[in-house]
Image (cartoon, rainbow, N blue to C red):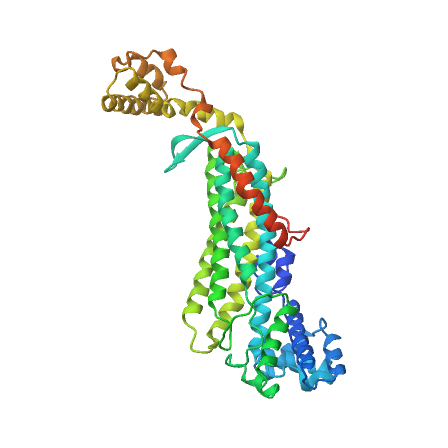
Length: 479
C-alpha cells in the first residue's frame, strides 16, 4: 500500500498499462512541447528567420531533461503552464531563450501535443483491438460447428453455434477498429495558426510572405508524421475532434460491456467460463464461488468510458467564438481518463477472449433439453405436409409446449415429443418420425459457414490493415 497521502487514480494503479500511462505523463508531454518548439525554430530558420544554429542546438540538447519541480515553481509565480515551461527551458538553454515560441500561441504546443498523444494512444488501442480480434477469431473457428441455444429476451429461441455467437462479439470490436483506423488516418494537425487562427504573427515574421507561412504550417506537421492539417482554426483546433475520438472510445466501452454481460450470463448458465487463476478467490465469505470478476470489471469500466464522451460533446458545443478556456480543466481529465479506461478494458477483453473455457457437456445438455421446443416449427411443417391445418396445429403445439414447461417446473417429465405424438392432431406422425427431427446440426442454419465466411472475407483483411497501424507493447499489465 502506498504511503502517499494524495489520491491516485485506480486507472493508473490497477487497470491501465504502463505504455498508455507514459503517453499521458507529464514528462512525455514536456518532451513533446520541447520537440514542437524545436521543429518550429528549425523550420523558421530554414525559411529565412535569423535564428542562430547554437540556439537550435541548445533546444535539441534539452528535449528530455525538464525539471518539473522547477516548472511548478515558475507556474506558481506566473499562473501560466506554457510560460512556466518556456522560462524553465530558457534557463536550461539560454542561447535559445530569445527565440523560443517565436510567433506562437500556447495552443501551438498544447493542442498539437494533444493531437500527437491522441494519435499515438489510438494506435496503441488498435494493437489491443487486434489482440482481442485474433483471440475471438481462433475461438470462433474452433467452435464454428458446435450447436448451442440461442436466446432472444434471454429466452431459448433457436439454435446457433458457439462460434457464430463469438463472431457477433468480434463484429462489434471490428467496427471499433474500423472507427479508430479512420481516425488515425484522418486526424489532422493544428499546426502554426497563431493566436486567433489568422497566422498574423507568422505573416509578420515572414514580412508578408504567405507562401512561407503556409510552408511553415505544412513542414512542422510533416515533422510529426501528420499528412493533414486542420484547414482553418481559431486559437484551438475544433473540439469536435475530441468528441469524435471519445465517440470511438465509447464504442470500445459498448463492445466490451456487451461481451462482458454475455459472458456473465453464460457463466451463470455454466456454458462458458472466464479464465481463473489457480489460487483465485471468489468471495471472502463463500470460498466455493467462481465469480466472473473480469467480465464484471469490464462492464464497470465500460460504463465509465461510455459516460465520458458526454464531456467532449458538451465542450465542443460550448466553445465561444475563437477560444474559451473552460475546456482546459475538463480536457485534462477526460482525454487521459478516456484513453486509460479504453486501454484497461481492452486488456481485460483480450485476456478473457484468450482464456474462455467452454463446458461442452453443459452446452450439449442444454441443447438436448431445448431441442423439442426447437423442433416444433419443423414438426409443424411436417404435420401440415401430412394434411394438417397450420393454425390448428400451431395452437396444439403451443398448448403442449406450455404444459410441458409447467411439468418441468414441477420437477416432472416434460416429454413434449411424447405429448405431441399422442395427440390425434399429429396422428400421421409417430414418435419415431418426430424423433428423427431432433439432430441439433440440422437447426443451426448456415452458422458454421457464416463463421468461416466472416473470418476469411472480412476479419482477416481487417487484421492485415491493423498490422500496418497498430502499436503493441509486449509487456502490457497483469489483469
